[in-house]
Amino acid sequence: MLEKILERIIFSSRWLLAPFYLVMILGLIGLLIKAGQAAFHFAAMDLAHASDRELIWTVGIHLVFVLTSFLLAFTDKIAADQDHG
Image (cartoon, rainbow, N blue to C red):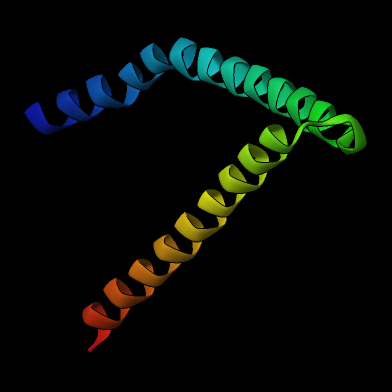
């Protein structure tokens, strides 16, 4: 009896989270739009008129992103190997 009441309360309370999920979806859509705008802006950047300093910063930032991605993948592989081995 108590178990069924508790199950009903938990099952019906999921609707309390629905507004939060909707706001998160709208926020993700907004972030997707802004990321698309930034990617378009970067793709449209005229590198012939960029200064050396701007090019160095752009390349440096991208190299950091690439290196951290490889490090993340490598540490993930190490963790997966330790879990299985």
